[in-house]
Structure formats: C-alpha cells, structure tokens
Length: 470
Image (cartoon, rainbow, N blue to C red):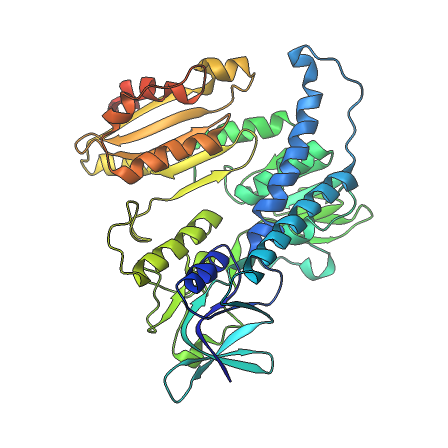
C-alpha cells in the first residue's frame, strides 16, 4: 500500500495550491479527483459563466449602440459560437491546471472517487480509490458542493437543468424558466435573456436576492424587468410536467408557465455522501457539511475540510483562502497580515449580474440590528446616478453604501452595486484587513474620473444610522 504524507480528496480551488504548497515543503502528496480537475469554478462555475457573461454583455451593448451615437444593423447571437468560446476557455484553464500539477515534483494526481477506509496499524489514514488503497498522515477534504433540486411533483417526468447541464446546451433555449431568484439564478437569467432567450424567474420570496438590503432587491427587480425578464415572486410551485413546448409549470395560485427548459437554481448540497466519514469517526451536520474550527480542522486529528464542504464561505475565493489558513497553521505562522482564520474574515462576495454587486461585511439590515442594541453605527450612501463617471458611461444603475463603527472607526461593511462594483469592493475588503480607521481612507488621494474617487466624499457624509433613516 503506497504511503503519502498528505492526501487531498477533491480538486476544488483550495486543493491544487495546497498540493503544490505541501509538495514545495518536501511532502509527498496525492490529489484525488473523481471528475474533472478544477472543481465547480473551472468546469461549471466561475470560468464558464463569466466567459459567457461577456458574450451576453457584448450583445447587450451592441443593442444599446444608438445610445452612444453608434449605428448598427440587426443584432444576432451565434449561440453555438458563444458556447464554443466558453468551452475553449474552460479547456484552456483545465489544461493549465493539469500541467501545473504534473510538473510539480511530489504531487501525484489520482483519478477516481476517493473515500476514507479507517486507519492502519500505525494510526495512519487509509484512503480508497476504487480497488486501490493508500495510507496518509494527513487528509484534506475539498470535495465541494453540487446543485440541489427540491422535491417538486412531476419533476421525474421532465429533463430539469442545473448549473452544469445548462452550460452543456448546444441550442439556445426558446423560453428558459428559472426556479430561484438568488445569485446563480439571476446571473444565468440575465445572460440567457441577453443571448436571446425568453426568461421567467420563479422565486419563493417576495423579493429577489433577499439576502441583500430591500432597496438593492428593488433595483435588481427593476433592471430585470426593463430587460424583459418576467418575475413571479412569492411563488410556490404546485407541479411540473411535459408540454408541447417542453415544460409546463403550475404555481399554487393556478398560474401556468409554458417553457422550453427549466433551470433549478435553488441552492447547493455538499459532496460528502461518498466520503465514508464514519470510518474515521467523523460526522457531518444535519445538512451534510463537515464542521471545522477556525483553522479548518475537523474533530479528527490531522483531518481538515476546506472549501464549500465546510460551510464557511461557499465561494472560490474563500476556498482559496482556506488553503492559506491551513498552510499558515502548519507552518506555525502567527502573524498573517490578514485575517488569521475563518472566523475573523468577513463575508465577501460579488454577484456578477450587469451591473455587478460587490459586498463585504455588514448590510444595512444587519447594521440596523446592531444600532438597535445600542452600537454607534454610521452609514452613508451615494447613488450611481450621482457619480460623474457612471453618467459618462451611461451606467447609472445602483449605489454605494458604507457602514462604519462610530467608536472604533472601523469599516464594518460596504455595498458597491453598479459599474465595476465587483472590482471596487476589493478596496473595502483590503482596507478592512488592516483594521485601520475609515478616516485614513477618507484622506486618501483618488484618481479622477473614476467611480471609486467618490469613496472619500461618501465617507465624509457618514451619519448615525437612525438619523440616516429617519
């Protein structure tokens, strides 16, 4: 039985860098992957969707050409060509990842489904891959999540799509019904609408992206409707079935929606069911995720869980950051010059609609709860419609919101919703990592003309949260 210093099961965004990092420290590493290297991000998440998003945005901007004094003819989308561009980008990314791992001395990539099979006589982990078994001193789980589809009457009679199978289509859906009005559903809804599909979004809540502040949800709903997306909010599905067009969905209020395809963007489920965690005495939580401490260690010594499977972020960047936390812990580095563990880092993410939404830390809704408890919370907003660069670009949808602790002067959260919001949010997340007073950012010299140049101006307008909402 071959022995490795470390075995990594799953090749999500933490795994390749962790494997190389451990190998560069002189350790022998086995990276086990049952599907395609790169996990969700490379194969059915970030890489393909952002590539396809660009095609959709180009089509949208060409349709808007007259707004900028440019004349064009009829706009058509070559869907197969857009999908081919997307797939080539995915293939290139995966080839690069494969080559990186192959040329790294000390890393062996093993293809197959990995699972735990107990301990050997020396107390080392035994890991199974098909008929093969390996021993390891350390095991890292990075198996990620998969699409979750809730039980719906009649679902077994239709060919429902998830985020992966949607991207495998070769023909543009005539009418795409999307169940779920959160981040994945909204991103894909806008993309396919701009590529030429009719799109209907069915969402169980009374507002889209309900994790966001109410006014943000309202802005999203407006630009979706402006682009011709039909919304059914606070909607419950009574059942689905086949129709002449493809799919017939019936809502509990009796509304019938006939479409060619239906996408379920209703959440994610952890890939832990095949890991045989019980063999080493590890239990998941009620939803199947692996509990860890702030250093990503499970209750079983020398067994870690990184990425989406630990329920500590569910983003590519948090998964990557997980591997940095683990390496720093193994190296016994105490001062990381950033958040030292998963408990300290704030929630940071973007929704890649157009315009994009960037978020870090507290929302206004969350900040109001702190204010109600007596915390001295300051807040300031500015609409994108009041920012010169946004007006010059004719990209005036959205807002910037900054939340500050009035006593410590620390920035607690920011929302940048609008042009370049997915990039600008890093200004806040990076600054928050320093723990410095917002007044330092307020005194910084910005570049004109940019959207971000208004950050000092916005900070100068901070007011107590109660007064700002009086």
